[in-house]
Amino acid sequence: MTGKELKESLRSGRRVYGTLIVSTSPRWIDIIGQINLDFVFIDTEHIAIDRHQLSWMCHGYTGKGMAPVVRIPSPDPYQACMALDGGAKGIVAPYIETVDEVQQLRGAVKTRPLKGQKLTEYLNGEKDLESGLAQYIEKHNEDHVLIINIESRPAIDKMDEILRVPGIDAVLIGPHDLSCNLGIPEQYDHPEFMAAVETIITGARNKNIGAGIHVTFAEGIEKEMAWAEMGANLILHSGDILGFTQVIHNEISILRKALGDDAEKSDTTINI
Image 1 (cartoon, rainbow, N blue to C red):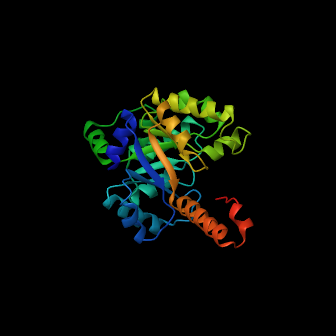
Image 2: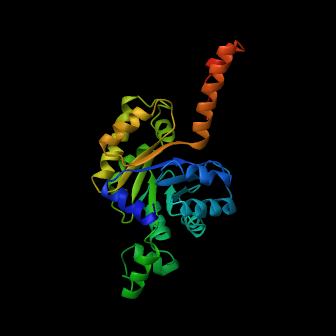
């Protein structure tokens, strides 16, 4: 899936499927290419991936038909530009809480290569672009996807205003950060958390903006299906390190119990 196809799917309500990729191994691209994904999520906010690694990962996954969506470390337009220069098709901006943050990211992702006063005047609605430039900008950025993280009460309270900014293709919920901001850390069944998720998903979809939540917690697939029924169409499921850890942990536990070795270790929980 290209960035343009991803963007069109998100806005139309069609579901797209992806997973978090942590490994920077070149071998991984061929393996992930067999999973039937539409996009891969590469997180540079929490994972130590440098610009060189990120760039070849983006080009590699693009070559396999999966749009690379990169979460930058902060809602910084310059970091967004660097990721796009490296080959990213989509940008995820973390912990958005203000309209100004989104406007700046819109400038970086949707109106490249405009900068400086000309960009500011355009974003503020003070001046229109020349017709030839407007056509160039649209074509130059047609493959770029802008996704914002909504993961706090202030962001939810300002959501209507935030989502009126042109150019937002999807919102992504960070469940861990959202639960902590609500004062109910990792209580994903809590009524307040569930209500917040529903507010975000329905608010975005009512504006023809994609919506999703990165599900990484145990037994989350049932909730994913329920949220998809609610309208979530950005399906970001688990991740390579999560899948590896869960499978190997379960299988080693089975072996320990069956062979009678350190049975107490078989029931330990893991945290990632």
